[in-house]
Amino acid sequence: MSVLVTGGAGYIGSHMVLELLDAGERVVVLDNLSTGFRWAVAPQATLIEGDFGDAALVGDLLSRFEVDAIIHFAAKIVVPESVADPLGYYENNTAKARNLLAQAVQAGVPHFIFSSTAAVYGEPKVSPVNEDAPKDPINPYGRSKLMVEWMLADVAAAHKLTYTALRYFNVAGADPQGRTGQSTPNATHLIKVAVQAALGKRRGMEVFGTDYPTPDGSCLRDYIHVTDLVRAHMDALRRLRAGGGNITCNVGYGRGYSVLEVIDTVKRVSGVDFEVRRSGRRAGDPASIVASNDRIRRELCWTPRHDDLEEIVRQALEWERGLEKRLAG
Ligand code: UDP
Image (cartoon, rainbow, N blue to C red; front, side):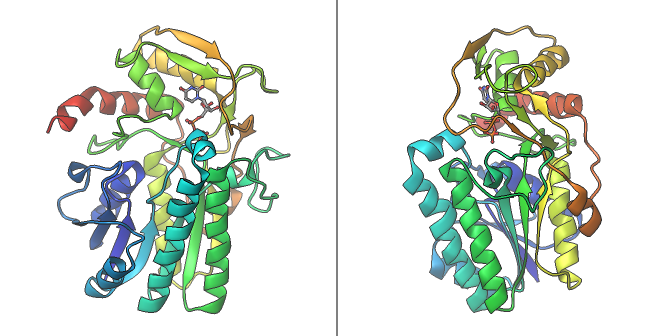
């Protein structure tokens, strides 16, 4: 029996692979290495270089490795890019996910864990937002993921497959043991960008929008440590294997930080006062989005262990410091 991790050479996927291996699981990674790295995949896992939309390849893997669960990370994840290239997002995140699901059903894979996103809520009317709030995404990224949630519900009703959809809030930080981290060269996510600015890898940074209806005018997000996030998948896997039914859960800490607060934290932890330029809003950004995590705590028995923005930033900094050496091989 093994677990198939799509996107296992990427940021979150590589943390998932370590968590699974630490728990004694057999792991197969399917990754096209478009943004991931071969070296990010722990050597005890089997890495197959290929696309999760490749039906023949996936079908072969599922039976050859006796896969009993698919954890599906591979996706495009940049909101403004999704606004500029909606068809790329619908192709990669939605159409190819449909093909993956078709292979899962054909091979009789019993369990599926899906990386969904807080972006399915759009601009929530209440904060923290719970899973039953209206789903009204305001960008193609959120819509590309919401469609997969719908597909999963329909597929699970029609076939023998149970699933967990996890709606990620803002994932950040790095493996506390320093084994992997956020390595994508042109990453656009706030903590990565701020950490690069602190280390002099970029000349300062921009704050996209300071006129939002939030306490300091910049956007509020719920930043969750990547290790707590992947542990939520372990909890989901355990529950599905024990016969648990289909469920969709937020994964966040239930607390929002503004962009300016995050930048201040990076400055404080790094001791570097880098330049911050205030600029206009970025396409597709909601003002505020914070998770209610009651359901995941209750149903998956998930408990956060790294709910600490300073720790998240410290580990992101440590990872970024050593990254050039790793990238150079
Ligand atoms: N952000 C920013 N400057 C940057 C990168 C991000 O001001 O260089 C803001 C972005 O506009 C959003 C928040 O930080 O309000 C979180 O953005 P990120 O891309 O990290 O995650 P998202 O919430 O879009 O998934």
